[in-house]
Amino acid sequence: MNATTSRNMNQTMPLRVGRRRFIGCGAGAASSFAIGCWSARTYPGWHEGEFDIHFIHTGVGEQTFFIFPDGTTMLLDCGDTHHAKYMVDVPPSPSKERLGGEWTSRYIRRLTTKREIDYLMVSHWHGDHVGDPALGCRKSAEGHSICGITAVAENFRFVRYLDHQYPNAGMYARDPDPEAFKMMQEWIPRAQRETGMMVEPFRVGSYDQISLKHNSREYGNFEVRNIAANAVLWDGRNGTIDCGREHVEAGGDAKIHENRLSAVIRIRYGQFSYYTGGDVELTLRGADGKDYNWEERIGRTVGPVHVCKTNHHAGCTAMSAGFVKAVRPRVYLSSVWQAGMVNEASLANMTSRDLYPGDRLICFGYIADRVKPVAARFAGDLAPAGHAVVKVLPGGGAYTVYILDASDESMRILGERTFIC
Image 1: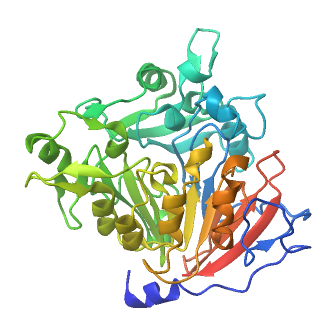
Image 2 (image 1 turned 135 degrees about the vertical axis):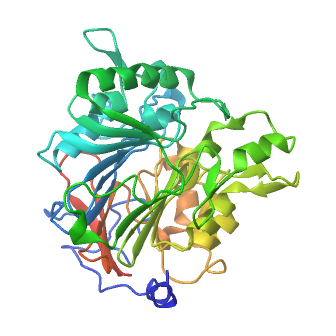
């Protein structure tokens, strides 16, 4: 990112205003966010040349659906984890009548008439990112567990699959969700046999493994860079660093927590840039035997972005000051399936003008009643709750953030704001 781009990240276009400005339509909505509380306007759909990021709120997991400028599609994660103790605070959305993967599938069907998704990417093996049969599932006629990703697979064929560890699953991993891991290990070969899904390792450092499949020549300014996976980090040039091996050989744990093995990518389109890193969190041990902030090291490799998916649901083990200062986004997208994911320490970092200046917008899918007092202290930087959609305009020079009603399937716009890159 050049100096001009960095300066322009502070600029915003005039707000589009719905029929009314915000009057209590969502917990902690920012006063500067254009809100149409009773608007009949709905999501305008994708058009050639636009890059859409759909951060879908179900209350039971994290999932992101991408439509690249030429129409190439990718699903990154899709969770189903029905912890009864958390569902008291964060209800399934739109309702408990369907599993999270089923609601996600229905959402995607409203975006595209195609029944193929070009890429399925798994950031790491936890139920809130792939589905967990132990915490809410149903069975197919053949007895297979259906939830999360496998529920989406009932309606869509995935053309290509990649995850953070394939084919060396478990090499460093500690604490993957066993039922989720088992379900996916059974489903992957079945999908290969039955649908021809191609399966391949996630190649750290690659800029063309995830690429445009339908019209790449038209959009030479679009790139997906694989930054990290399985504790291996791109060195910013032409190589990689096996930080997991360094950690183990330096006398750290023989295994590394699954969250820290999450796959990380950065997407650029023109001047626009986006970060997503699964549940990446704090400490690893370096070759010198000293602990360091793994999240911050990734952030320094990524550099400044315009929009950032929060690490580990913006919980207490992520969104450290060092990481936030390195990536400096204007917009944060954060998945919520338990109340504590709206965390005061993380919010303090994300909203700090001491770490970096300028406006920002934080999009939580849901803010539970018991954390609304925390959210209220940061209300000026919060969008209303709901699905968050980032639409990057053709050429990548500007982007609009839409918040859509997640309480039903209307795709109704609750508010929107447009930024210049």
